[in-house]
Length: 138
Image (tube, rainbow, N blue to C red):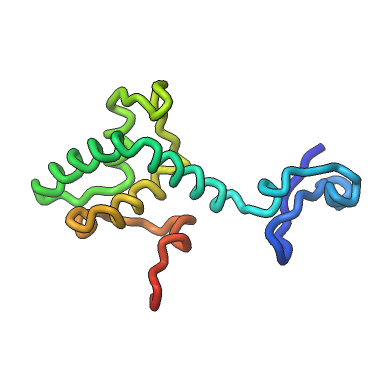
């Protein structure tokens, strides 16, 4: 059965494309956290968790990005992704740290927020994560 999500007041609802019935109408129990949160929210939360759990990886990435910035270059998601993929990092659980394209845009924004000296050199393109980084009064 193919299901899509449709926006509702409290989040998103899984709906059978063929019949138009929701999982709830069919008596199917769903994981409410997956139904009520959109993908950007879930990815943001996962990106934040990975960022916090693997701070050692991002500290090294910051040093690399600072090096690029000191040469007068702007840095962005592409440079961060290339650096992370080009190195064998160990994650917080002792396994391989894996770079996921779904999180790069959030990670570069975390770095811009956490490292004010680097922020002016970071180029940010529009992202589905922008709403999570809006500052008061903007």
